[in-house]
Each structure stands twice: as C-alpha cells, then as structure tokens.
Length: 409
Length: 106
Image (cartoon, rainbow over all chains, first blue to last red; front, side, top):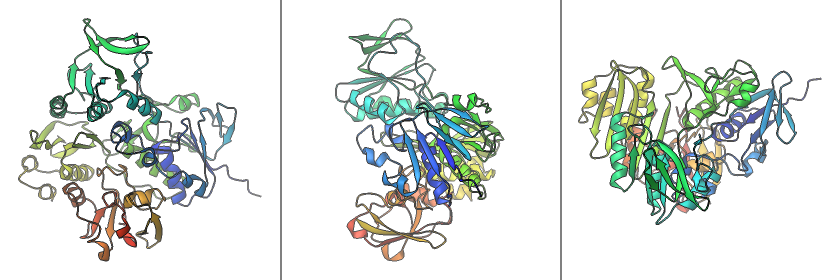
C-alpha cells in the first residue's frame, strides 16, 4: 500500500509563495499544499504599498493576489500568523513556533527579505518606520497628509516612491542619502540626476552625502533627523529605506548553502533535491550573465515560482527570462531590464528634459541592461535584445529618429 | 457582473462572471485562469497579460493608450486584435466578451 503523500509545504506567503501554490494547482499537482505565512493576510502584492495604495488609489481587496475563497477551492491550506522556526531535512519536517509540525515531500522556502533597520540613538521613537508589509504601509499612511513632513533615510526606489506619495497626499518630503547621489547602488548617474531634478521640481528636498547620527524626538515621537555636523532636519515621521537583507536564517540553520541569499540552481532547487527556494531570499544563477545574483523583484519571484512548480510537477523547465522591474513616481513610469554587469559603455536615447528617454548599457555592441523613463518601446525592445544577445549598431540605437523596431530589426 | 470567456491557447474555455470595474486581467488572475501571467499586477509595465480580443468585441473594448501600443509593439505573436488585458475595464457592455490567450506570455 502506498503511503499518503505529505505534499508541498511553502514557507512564506508573499508574492512568490502565493504564486507557486497557485501554479502547482494550474500544473495539475494533486497532493496537499500548505502555505505558511507569518502575516495575518493571505498573499498580496507589495509593490503598490509604496505607490498606488499609499496614495489611496487602490483598496486592500485589489492588493490580494487571489480572492479569499480561492485557497479553499484550490485545496491550498493557508496557515497564517504562524512562523516556521526550523526545518529537519532528515525527517522532512517543518516546525512552527506554536509547536505544530508539518511533513513534506517537497519544501519551498519563500521567506523573502526584511527591511534593514538603523542602529542609532532614537531609532525606537514612535514615527520611525520601515515599509515592507501592509501593516507597515498602514502605519506610514497614518503619518502622511497636509502639513506633514516625511523624512526618508535612503534614496532608493522605496524611499523615492514614498516621497512622491507623501507629496501627492499634500505633505512634504526630504530624502537623506549617504552616497553622493540618490539611486547610487542601482542606477547610472544620468538616471539619478533625472530623478533628483524631477522630485526637486515638485517640492522634495535632498540631503546627499549626509550621514545620519541620531533621530531626535519629543514625548517619545520623532521630530527630526540629526546629521553629522549637528544640523537637525525637522520632520513628523521617518521612513528608513536602506535595503532588505534576506530571511535566510532558517535555511542556514538547516545546513543549506547560503551566500547572501539561499543558493539555488536554475530550477530554484537547493543542494537538497526536496528543498526549493524562490524569490527575494535566493541567490540564483543568471545564465545570460554567467554569474549568480540576489534579485529583489516581483518578476524574479514569479520566474522562480514557475521554475519550482515545473520541477515539482516534472514539466519542462521554463525558458530563462531577462530580469526586469519597474517603479512609478508621479506621472513617470520607470522600467528597467537586465543587469548593468560587465558593461563598458552606456548611451542615452531620447530627451531627458522631456522626461522620455532610455539609458542603454552595453558590452561592445551587445545590450546588457536598459533603464527607460516613459519609454516603453525602448524597454520592451531592449528587454528582447538583451535576451537575444544580438549585436546592434550603437549609432542607430542612440538616434531616436530611428524607431526601436528598425534598430532591433 | 459581466460574463467573460477566456480561451486558453489549447482551446480550453473558462466562462467567468467578472465584477464590473475589474480589468479583464484581474478577472483571470483572481480565478487562477492559466495563460495570463500579469507579472506587474496591472501597471502596464510588463506585457504578460496579452490577449486577442474576439473580432466581434474588438470595437467595444476601447482604444489602446500610447503606452499600451508601445508595449504591444514588442510583445510576441502580436495580432491586430491584441490587447493588454490589464487595460480593458469590464463594463456591463462587455457582458459576453471573448478573449483568447497567446501560446506564451514570455
């Protein structure tokens, strides 16, 4: 007599975890699926939390990846508000903090990343926030509005999107960045300068090359950010957006290889054939670049969800994708594809002053990455050319009188 | 509610009652219909919710924005009735709409 299958256990009910559960059912997987989430909510989309949701343009229902009724209909067991604390790979058991245990045939770790916090005096004052979860976003939203000034520590996407949302809600925002320019880790100088100017023209102020020494407060609530040198930037709330380390500890404790992310192969599988990892928590090979990266994006979460679901249901692996992401700020749609890794040249196509342009990063005549502002054709064509690794003419690419269709032809 | 029929590339049909106000993409994703990926969740940023609108319905689904047009220009297997389903809002007038899915969104 065959043993009843334990099925698949998924740790982490974010975009990656929720998607892989649904895909397994789409692909005909029949065994039990259990999805464990430490938040009280069923899987939802995080990107709108700093964009449309924060500005009140979309409601909680539309954040949900699937309607609440979906999980019962698809026979996916949701275990919410629960934390997985240990994995025993020998017996294939996951331990939860409330004492429960779950056995698995396949395990998928989709624990994501957590907002990095500041270890500084005053960091525990009320009004000092990070933004990762829907609950974080509720707290932040309550601090925004007319007459309220938000200080953002960290000039990355999250911080800039939150600043734009703060202004849209009638308040003010100041962005404090340690590096000499905003978006220093993720974008080229032209893109940084463009976003800096665009935000400044709409009322955001910037403090770049600024080191934060202390958060100051009154009555237990934050009232300002003190910089090295003593100057205090007054504010009503502080959002810390300085990156997100991976939640890899549970994998590390289980003896799985971690290197700034859980190490997986091109099928999202760890060295243990029964254990997969997907999404922000992984360090994964990108065949296009011949190197491994930890990517933090929805597109990456979904691609790896497809890889894991295909591997578990023994379907052919999906074709490798070109990694991409996007950001919405004011009326700007910023889309980027590929990784500016191992590049020797970049060029601007279009009109920066008209807020419609793209920056292409090349190695020789091959496009490795594209950053596009209100330039969907450049983004889409660039993404395709990156995947094809096909050489193009730099002169024609830089000439916006020649359409992207002709450039790519 | 409006009835929307989603036809997978392999011919499998899914007739779904979609709430007016949602997009055709949301109607598919919320019901776990295979073939519409919608990686960006409806931000018109990814072109992974590509559908072919049935000829009879092509006029009723409205005009494409410049953004959508540009995104579609570089999607795979584009046809004259191609749309990004995140950009089609479901209305009472679309009761009976039929959309077909391409072979792949990627």
